[in-house]
Length: 80
Image 1: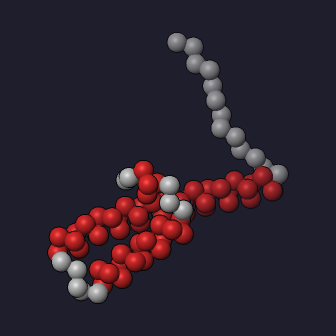
Image 2: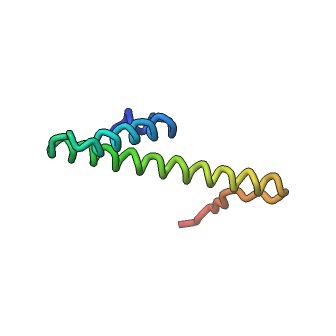
Image 3: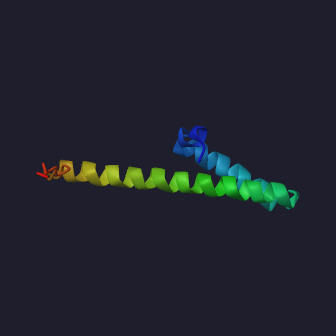
């Protein structure tokens, strides 16, 4: 995934994905361009899914803190 895509907000990535899908559904896109759009759409879909998963995890974390249960990463010091 390109660096510029990683910086896209969820909303911007979703809008871009919707535009790609609409152009692909029009049936007027040459095959080579269709494949490129499919690849770009797939990357945007993965980005949107990751952003949604991050939001879901954040919501779960906030709910646990609200309920008085807070989990923090457990770090250990290993002796080698």
